[in-house]
Structures are given as structure tokens and as C-alpha cells.
Image 1 (cartoon, helix red, strand yellow):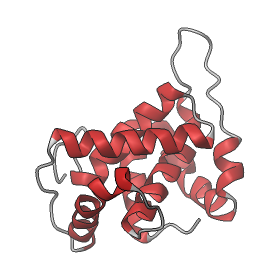
Image 2 (cartoon, helix red, strand yellow):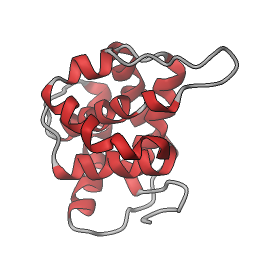
Image 3 (cartoon, rainbow, N blue to C red):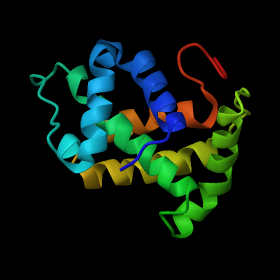
Length: 154
């Protein structure tokens, strides 16, 4: 799966904001993902002890998969009614990011639809539902407007 420079930028922003412990190995993980996305994603399994949450070192491949998936939706590599509803909004967000412009306000319905399709994609890739929801929420937020911890359009 080829990731565009914008895809990598979105993924890097999500990892830096939400999984900073993985920033040090981000570039290596991108390289592995570009070589073999399925192996990189499917080889990742949260391994934290019960009650300790998700081990942070396992999230970057899911972030890359989610970002690549949204890029596929924008490029119309993925089709279907659920995707048609959010495709134009994702295109506008990508164009704004490529132009270096800040994000625009996002309605909850659009954001929610995007999160759902990314969660389904990640679960199909082997992520557990909790990890999929967490990553999807962060990636969609960053993709649609850069509204991570530092606020919209950081």
C-alpha cells in the first residue's frame, strides 16, 4: 500500500499526539508498512496485561492502515454507499491539508460515519474493537481537521 506524503503527515501527527512513545520508531514502521502492510498490521497484537489498557507500541501500524484506508476512500479505491456519504468531505479535508490550510468545522455525523468505516476496516485487519475505535477516532479527527490535543488546525 502506497502512502502519500499527506497520509504520512496525518499518521505522524496522530502518533505524535496520541502515541508519542512510538514516535522514535515511526519512520521504521512506515517503511515496514510500505513493504508489507498486511504483515505489519496483522503481526500487531495488543499485549498489555489485563487491566493495563492497550500497549502503546502496537498502535502505529493501525494508524497507518487507517490513514491509508481513508486515502483509498478519497481516491475512490473503495466504493459503496457508506463511503459515498463521507468521500467529498474527506477530499476537501485532504485538499486543505495539501494546500497548508487549517481544517474546517466538522459535523458530528460526518465524523461519526468516518470513524465507523475506519473501525470496520481495522477490525477486518485484525485489530480488536477497542484499539480500532481508539485509533479511528484519533485518525479521523486529525484527517478532518487536525483537532488533536492542540486544537483544530494546530
